[in-house]
Amino acid sequence: MMKQFGYAILALGVMAILCTLSIDTSVPSGMFGRVNNIGLMQEKQNYLIVSSLIVLVGVVLAVAGFNVPPPRKGYGIVKNFFLIILWFLVFLAGGYFLNTLTPQYREDKIKMEKDNLELQQATEELQRSLGQLEEANNRASNFTHNRE
Image (cartoon, rainbow, N blue to C red; front, side, top):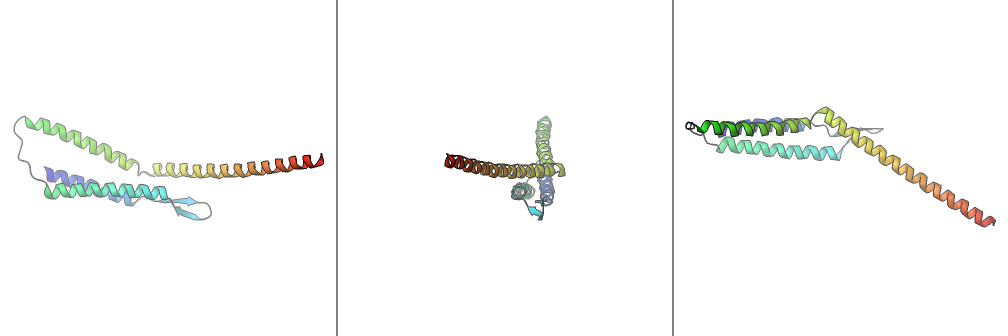
Protein backbone atom coordinates (compact mmCIF):
# COMPACT_ATOMS: atom_id res chain seq x y z
CA MET A 1 0.00 0.00 0.00
CA MET A 2 2.78 2.44 0.89
CA LYS A 3 4.62 1.67 -2.32
CA GLN A 4 1.57 2.47 -4.43
CA PHE A 5 1.01 5.66 -2.47
CA GLY A 6 4.70 6.52 -3.02
CA TYR A 7 4.32 6.00 -6.76
CA ALA A 8 1.23 8.25 -6.79
CA ILE A 9 3.05 11.01 -4.87
CA LEU A 10 6.05 10.60 -7.19
CA ALA A 11 3.83 10.99 -10.26
CA LEU A 12 2.17 14.07 -8.73
CA GLY A 13 5.59 15.58 -8.00
CA VAL A 14 6.89 14.92 -11.51
CA MET A 15 3.78 16.53 -13.01
CA ALA A 16 4.23 19.52 -10.70
CA ILE A 17 7.88 19.89 -11.78
CA LEU A 18 6.89 19.77 -15.45
CA CYS A 19 4.21 22.42 -14.87
CA THR A 20 6.66 24.54 -12.91
CA LEU A 21 9.29 24.40 -15.63
CA SER A 22 6.75 25.73 -18.12
CA ILE A 23 6.21 28.99 -16.19
CA ASP A 24 7.23 32.02 -18.23
CA THR A 25 9.16 34.47 -16.05
CA SER A 26 9.48 37.25 -18.61
CA VAL A 27 7.06 40.14 -19.00
CA PRO A 28 6.53 42.52 -21.92
CA SER A 29 8.35 45.82 -21.64
CA GLY A 30 7.73 48.82 -23.85
CA MET A 31 10.79 49.43 -25.96
CA PHE A 32 12.99 46.62 -24.61
CA GLY A 33 10.80 43.69 -25.69
CA ARG A 34 10.55 41.14 -22.90
CA VAL A 35 12.44 41.36 -19.62
CA ASN A 36 12.80 38.88 -16.76
CA ASN A 37 10.57 39.51 -13.76
CA ILE A 38 12.32 38.81 -10.44
CA GLY A 39 9.02 38.13 -8.64
CA LEU A 40 7.98 35.50 -11.18
CA MET A 41 11.46 33.97 -11.07
CA GLN A 42 11.22 33.70 -7.26
CA GLU A 43 7.75 32.17 -7.51
CA LYS A 44 9.01 29.62 -10.05
CA GLN A 45 11.92 28.77 -7.76
CA ASN A 46 9.57 28.24 -4.79
CA TYR A 47 7.30 25.96 -6.83
CA LEU A 48 10.32 24.00 -8.04
CA ILE A 49 11.58 23.48 -4.48
CA VAL A 50 8.17 22.29 -3.26
CA SER A 51 7.76 20.01 -6.27
CA SER A 52 11.21 18.53 -5.69
CA LEU A 53 10.34 17.82 -2.07
CA ILE A 54 7.15 16.08 -3.21
CA VAL A 55 9.22 13.93 -5.61
CA LEU A 56 11.69 13.15 -2.81
CA VAL A 57 8.88 12.03 -0.49
CA GLY A 58 7.42 9.92 -3.30
CA VAL A 59 10.76 8.23 -3.97
CA VAL A 60 11.31 7.50 -0.27
CA LEU A 61 7.83 6.02 0.07
CA ALA A 62 8.19 3.98 -3.12
CA VAL A 63 11.61 2.59 -2.20
CA ALA A 64 11.31 2.17 1.56
CA GLY A 65 7.57 1.57 1.68
CA PHE A 66 6.28 -1.74 2.84
CA ASN A 67 3.33 -3.78 1.69
CA VAL A 68 0.68 -3.87 4.37
CA PRO A 69 -1.07 -7.20 4.82
CA PRO A 70 -4.80 -7.21 4.14
CA PRO A 71 -6.64 -5.56 7.01
CA ARG A 72 -8.73 -7.46 9.49
CA LYS A 73 -12.46 -7.21 9.36
CA GLY A 74 -13.70 -3.81 10.54
CA TYR A 75 -10.35 -2.10 10.00
CA GLY A 76 -11.03 -1.39 6.31
CA ILE A 77 -13.62 1.31 7.00
CA VAL A 78 -11.25 3.36 9.14
CA LYS A 79 -8.38 2.89 6.70
CA ASN A 80 -10.52 3.86 3.74
CA PHE A 81 -11.82 6.91 5.57
CA PHE A 82 -8.28 8.17 6.24
CA LEU A 83 -7.23 7.44 2.65
CA ILE A 84 -10.22 9.38 1.34
CA ILE A 85 -9.31 12.35 3.54
CA LEU A 86 -5.66 12.11 2.48
CA TRP A 87 -6.53 11.99 -1.23
CA PHE A 88 -8.93 14.88 -0.77
CA LEU A 89 -6.15 16.98 0.81
CA VAL A 90 -3.74 16.02 -1.97
CA PHE A 91 -6.42 16.94 -4.52
CA LEU A 92 -6.98 20.33 -2.88
CA ALA A 93 -3.25 21.07 -2.70
CA GLY A 94 -2.73 20.00 -6.32
CA GLY A 95 -5.70 22.07 -7.48
CA TYR A 96 -4.37 25.16 -5.73
CA PHE A 97 -0.89 24.53 -7.07
CA LEU A 98 -2.08 24.06 -10.65
CA ASN A 99 -4.49 27.00 -10.39
CA THR A 100 -1.61 29.36 -9.70
CA LEU A 101 0.07 28.15 -12.89
CA THR A 102 -2.85 29.02 -15.17
CA PRO A 103 -2.26 31.67 -17.83
CA GLN A 104 -5.08 33.87 -16.45
CA TYR A 105 -3.41 33.98 -13.02
CA ARG A 106 -0.08 34.92 -14.57
CA GLU A 107 -1.71 37.54 -16.83
CA ASP A 108 -3.51 39.09 -13.87
CA LYS A 109 -0.29 39.16 -11.86
CA ILE A 110 1.63 40.73 -14.76
CA LYS A 111 -1.16 43.30 -15.27
CA MET A 112 -1.06 44.17 -11.57
CA GLU A 113 2.72 44.63 -11.67
CA LYS A 114 2.40 46.77 -14.80
CA ASP A 115 -0.27 48.89 -13.10
CA ASN A 116 1.99 49.29 -10.06
CA LEU A 117 4.85 50.40 -12.31
CA GLU A 118 2.59 52.95 -14.05
CA LEU A 119 1.41 54.21 -10.65
CA GLN A 120 5.00 54.56 -9.48
CA GLN A 121 5.94 56.48 -12.64
CA ALA A 122 2.91 58.76 -12.24
CA THR A 123 3.86 59.39 -8.60
CA GLU A 124 7.42 60.29 -9.59
CA GLU A 125 6.11 62.64 -12.31
CA LEU A 126 3.76 64.25 -9.81
CA GLN A 127 6.62 64.74 -7.34
CA ARG A 128 8.75 66.34 -10.08
CA SER A 129 5.87 68.65 -11.01
CA LEU A 130 5.35 69.53 -7.35
CA GLY A 131 9.05 70.33 -7.00
CA GLN A 132 8.93 72.57 -10.08
CA LEU A 133 5.82 74.27 -8.74
CA GLU A 134 7.49 74.95 -5.38
CA GLU A 135 10.57 76.27 -7.16
CA ALA A 136 8.44 78.60 -9.29
CA ASN A 137 6.58 79.74 -6.19
CA ASN A 138 9.86 80.51 -4.43
CA ARG A 139 11.10 82.48 -7.44
CA ALA A 140 7.86 84.45 -7.56
CA SER A 141 8.08 85.12 -3.83
CA ASN A 142 11.70 86.29 -4.18
CA PHE A 143 10.76 88.47 -7.13
CA THR A 144 7.95 90.05 -5.12
CA HIS A 145 10.27 90.66 -2.17
CA ASN A 146 12.89 92.22 -4.39
CA ARG A 147 10.35 94.63 -5.93
CA GLU A 148 9.26 95.89 -2.55
